[in-house]
Structures are given as structure tokens and as C-alpha cells.
Length: 254
Image 1 (cartoon, rainbow, N blue to C red):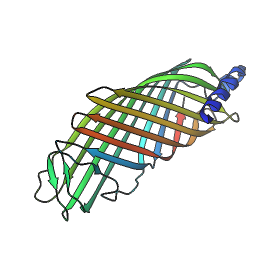
Image 2 (cartoon, rainbow, N blue to C red; image 1 turned 135 degrees about the vertical axis):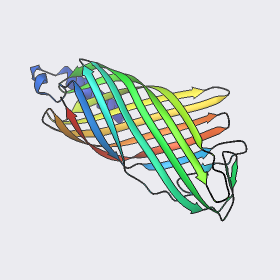
Image 3 (cartoon, one colour; image 1 turned 90 degrees about the vertical axis):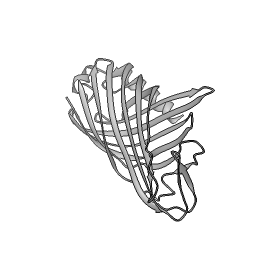
Image 4 (tube, one colour; image 1 turned 60 degrees about the vertical axis):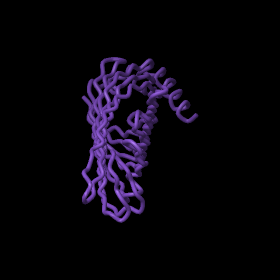
């Protein structure tokens, strides 16, 4: 409900835009943003014949980490091309309290075991703003989220087998921005995808809301909250991955 109100506000504000658009932060051709994100992770993977679910976060007491990512937007009128990339890496060692089977290998109780996870999320897409002006915009976008995941467990006497999957996910969503003042705005966006077949199931949901304080037309700072959820069940692999938490960033426009 709150998101609907935000998008409606953006539409109303855009409708009231005037000739001052040239002085607006929205009058840019390129935007680049550097993001520092500290998500709370939940990552459970099952892989291989007779594999058991492996909780990479709780079993191995992985701490929260801050990750850097970047976003770019190329704009021409109501059309935008968007690109972003995040690289999420966790690793930790723990003595197992229960036997785990992963990628065809068995890791037994009492053995120090190291878990490593590397998840790269690359997004490229197209956005069309049906309503756009100096006071905000309201639009839809389509993108391809390419998930590249590598995970492995290693322990003395066990030959480590690497879980390596690349999962491209097409998503569709909506986005809106409203200016509270001339240089302070609130933006929200949501994308999703669901695939359900007899031999495979996949779901991806990405929600992002953030405020921007623009330091003139060319510079700004952001603070926001993002939630990413990925669920899949393909052949002998099952994944349940969630990342959610606050972030801050710096942007430049020209």
C-alpha cells in the first residue's frame, strides 16, 4: 500500500513539472553510483545426490560483511539503460555438530570444515518512464539478472567438490521517484520472476527503496534498504538465498 502511494505521488508531482526541469537533478544523461551494502544473509544450499541442506550462515557462524557494488544509468528522454553488479563473498570455518553431505562428499561430526561462498549478481536492463519530469518519474523496466554462484566445503581428508552454477533470470518490475523538496527525493522499485514447471522451480524477488540528497545537479548521497530473495529447485540442486539490509552510496551525474 505504501509503495502504491509513493508511485501515485510521483505521478502527481511529475504532472506538475514546469520549465525549471533544466535545473533539476533529473536532467542528466549518465548517472553512476557507488554503493556500500551491509545485508543480513540467509543462505541454505542442497547439492548432489542424497545431499543434505547446508546452512552456510548459521552452521559456520558467518558474520555480516559490507560489500561494494556499483550502478550505472544511461538516459535519453524517457528511456534508460541500467547496469549494476554486486559481488557477495562469505567464508568461515567451524567444527560440525552434524554430518553434512554436499556435492557428493560427506563431512562428518567433529571435523573442522571450511565453507566458502561467492555470489556475483549482474543486472542489465531497460527502463521506460511513462511519466517523467523535474519532480520525479513513474516507469516500468525489464532486466536480466545473471546469478553466478560458487560454493564449496573443505575438510581434512575430503576432496572438495565445487558447486558452480550460473542462473540467468529475466525479471519485470516497476519504479517510481518523488521529490519531497527540489533536491531531496524518495525512490522505490520492485522486480520479480517466478518459474514453475514439473522439472524445475525458480523465484526471484528484488525490492529497493532509498532516499537521495542531491548536492546540486551533479552530486548526491543515498541511503536505502534492499531485499533480494532467490529460491530454486533444479534437478538435484535446491537453494534458498536471502539478503536484506541497509546501504549508503555516493552518486555522480552529468
